[in-house]
Image: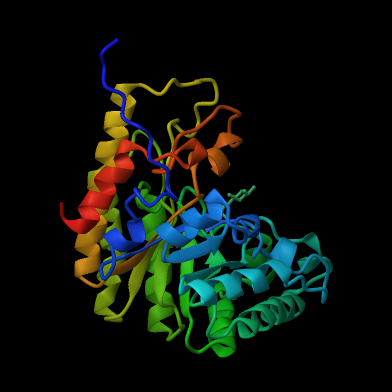
Length: 347
Ligand code: XIL
């Protein structure tokens, strides 16, 4: 065996390029993290400080953990998150205030429109005002649309009506006039029906003067991602800048699954061919993101997870290992990481 084996580079090491530095002045680069990785001199914490200029909490700021019972707020993790952001000069995203999932059932118990509106406004008002000036961006409403287009018939929609979205954004603006307020969803880049509904919903909100600052594209992508379609669908949303010149998009939950969504049987092996396609897709994505950044349409791209080892896609929706991020297991940098960093620095 005389094949050269290069020594691995780990994300926290001095020898590793830094994504946030590579894209400095162009794009903020982030990750979804958990507070257990925000302290101590650990590889995870060093990686976060070295690599990222924006952070989201993966789970701990969702309604379920934040207000498990009516009126009982749990702020420990969010307080730690806020302090970490302040200490390290990292932009923070709040995720999320109004969602059908990871939302405790008490919100809907015995609620008519007025009661649910009150509970929603109390939650938003209490949480957003506590972190005024500290959490810069909120995913105010998450996943409000159906996969096939049209409004998702969640309890929020059924009990309050379609204007729950507008009311949520108004409450968030009142609680923090300076925060950027985002409507976040998945499959917008791949589904014409869904992006069409999103464009129509956002247009109506903007025309009605609702304080909506942008649309979050989660971008949970897979091996069949159609980049032409993705670019086209992003443009359907950025066209709304004709109504509000500072309207933006954000990439909020980026990952590139090794599996097709519905394919639960396959257990892939990581091959050179997969590696090449993975690298090319990520490279094309970041070239497109830089174009959008230059136009002033996009300023933040957040990966959903710190590394392959802790990605949500390992357990869901199949039990197999997944390889969706630029930072691999053990925080080892993949070839795609170096390629993307090079796109940032223009090398
Ligand atoms: C996921 C987390 O990553 C998992 O740990 C949790 O079990 C379920 O939620 N869209 C979103 C995120 O907006 O909040 C989801 O996060 C992933 C899909």
